[in-house]
Length: 234
Image 1: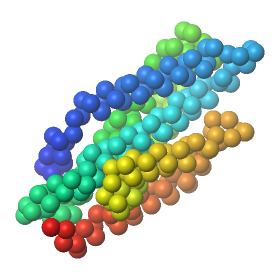
Image 2: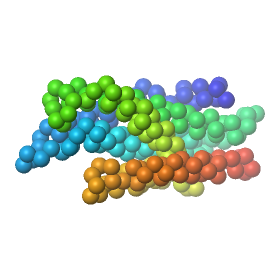
Image 3: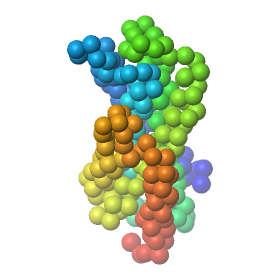
Image 4: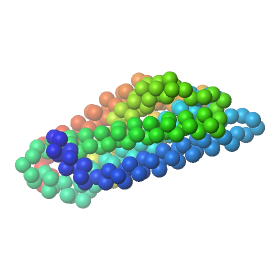
């Protein structure tokens, strides 16, 4: 399994996705810092540090759920769309192992990139906030520790899991466009329902929702992949 994952890793331009993660995170930081610094009518965009960090986490989740869809499209769906998967399935290796290796590569890469973005975000936004006063509060080490353990880790794992859901829809049509489009829809549905209660008013803020979606993603992965072992696509 590890060898299969390494083989898939070679196919993925890892540095391209690291660079994309840095650019995405930089854009999020600039956007949030701008919102905080340029206030209107004396009203701050963020009432406190908690709101500031929640905003960053929300934008990271949205971005990397979509990025997971792009990864799925490149690593898995594109091979079905172009019929190159037939070459892999002609080898004397279990189809289940091949597909599971691909799935794990997408999951691990999404998790690593999301956590990388979270660490980069909290590091830079702390420096900016403590020097430019984006909020009236100072971000302390204990706040950073709490954010990384309670928020970033949970967001990373759930984003990596939920990011696999578009696989089911992509496999139905064997379409890259359907895969990426469904990742955008899922991301906006889960994170975009910001209402009167502020930045925390969305479906993701209810812990049970992302947990249930993680379970659904596992079931959809089973439906998408493990039935392939029973089909003759060659």
